Image (cartoon, rainbow, N blue to C red; front, side, top):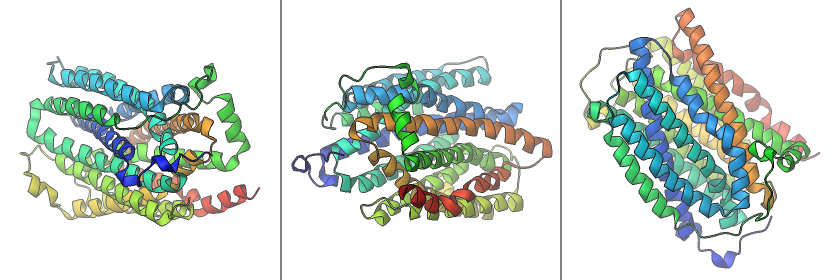
Amino acid sequence: MTEPNSDEHRPLFRDRAFQGISITQFLGAFNDNVFKQLVLLMCVDFRSQAGRNYQPVAVALFAIPFVMFSGLAGWLSDRNSKRTVVVLCKVAEIVVMLLGMAVLAFPFASEETRLGMLFVVLFLMSTQSAFFGPSKYGILPELFRGRDLPQANGFIQMTTFVAIIFGVAVVGYCKEWLGGAVWKLGGIAVAIGVVGTATSLLIRRTPIAQPRLPFSWSSLAINHQTWKMLMTDPALLVVLLVSTLFWFVGGVVHPAVNEFGKLQLGMSDGRTSLMAACMGVGIAAGCVLSGKMSRGRIEFRLVTLGAWGLVIHLLILGGIGIGFQVGIVKPQPPTPLLQLLLPSTTAEFLSRLTFLGLGISAGVFVVPLQVFLQSRPADDQKGRMIGAMNLVNWIGIVCSAVFLMLIQQLLDAWKLGVSWVFPGTALMLVPVALGFHRWFRRLETR
């Protein structure tokens, strides 16, 4: 792998390109999560009123563009300037947020019709994010030196999840207070998209990886070269599969949190969103911790440590659901912000604490996987490798939506709360906690 010319670079945090990509990613992640969480909360409301469960549909619609377009996005990121792709994606974000604001403001005949239109916007928003991803991550090794990558990834992962924290928390609070004027959130999202487009211009230009890279239909999925690389590098393949399992679990847990808070523990939108935000705080802290503990290396012992943390905290959440189930409560007046920050029940306090620990474990778990998948491929394969990673990870999230839909049907039939989803996903992570580090060491020594 060719190192970027160190003469062109200041220390990481004083580098304008690093500042630009970090702010751009932060604002994009904020917008994505504001809109996605708003749609998910509206789906929970519709489930409590009409009995139909649309949360898995929303998760699937958000994930499908990544399955459809990640391969093509990876090809584009290697065929063109990654900076150009990033800037164009931010312009597309402005257009999509304008459409979202219009749907929220327009008076529809029924909430089910509004949800259908919001699903269309959610799909479009996810599409621009799918094209953004390979260039966003693939450009990091082109901009920064290898020894800076763990810290750069840790910081960007941290700011991404800080954006998730604010995005998720803001939605719950604003949904309570704005009521029918929730369309104003769309106006804020448009403004944020404009600022994110401006900050993307701070990213310096990098050479095009393969300016004459031909298109092939395999570019829509995993192209022949990338597939061959995965088949001849079992360590890379195993890390990719473990990364996919991580995102499968995340795809199950996030919507389950909304239903766990609103329909099982009887919390408001604001309190439910803050509970989910605690998980985001933990992930941000875990990403920074993982970057520090890596000390410039890829340290896979952290994956094992994070896996055990995920298993333990998911089991605890299952126990909280069994011990403190309340059920749906009647709508209440909006809660003032300072009062909202304080847990109102023992169940809420324990849940926030457990989601914080769950998030820390997730951050520690994911950073070494991300760095390995970025740095392992050759320079001319990085963009397509990130595209393949996004494709496979989002296939995992689509599968999580199907899994969640099926498991919720079973839980409804057995009259059990959604908290039983948490120990179920914990069991899937036990093999990784027990064997990942040993598997990887055997593969590396082949």
